[in-house]
Amino acid sequence: MQKIKVARPRIVELCVNGASRYVSVQPRNFLVDVLRETLGLTGTKAGCEQGTCGACTVLVDGRPVLSCLTLAADCEGKDIRTVESLMEGGNMSSIQKAFLDQGAVQCGFCTPGMLMSITALLESNPKPSVPEIKKALEGNLCRCTGYNKIMAAVLQASDQGVTPLMK
Image 1 (cartoon, rainbow, N blue to C red):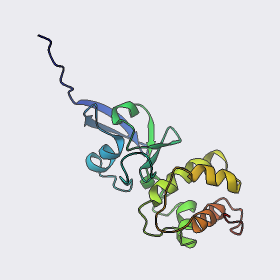
Image 2 (cartoon, rainbow, N blue to C red):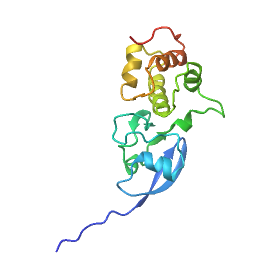
Image 3 (cartoon, rainbow, N blue to C red):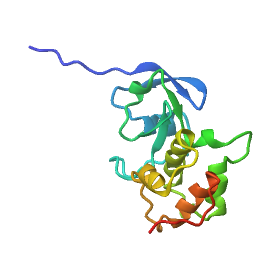
Image 4 (cartoon, rainbow, N blue to C red):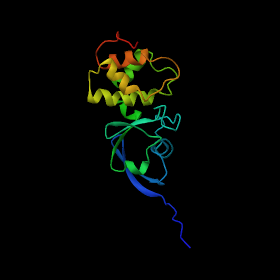
């Protein structure tokens, strides 16, 4: 008779928003659940939980990832940034201010994922073109309205003005 192996939780060290955190995770735990339920970082939203809406986007080693499809244990030793990392000394980052200025927050559920995708874009390309912005946001869905205000916010944050909107 073959023995069935039972997966056991293990302690992993996650570097979240610049701080090392030791958490007990099951092999099947997704990063979004560990961030929200174990670490209390509720800024990251669990939207569709199937990787199609982008609401759960966080940065892992500077790249946007869908935390609802990323196993927490696979993030051990990697730099994880959530929307909470965007505050700078108690002040909003330039991209957060731009979203507020342009009215790009709508209901706000998709906003954390949008902010993280755009943060990754602006950190690698401070002056993206409109097509580059569209490409960066293609995995983030906003169900409230169009993307014109979001595009205007990205252009404002990248200091390119706010007039060239999506067609």
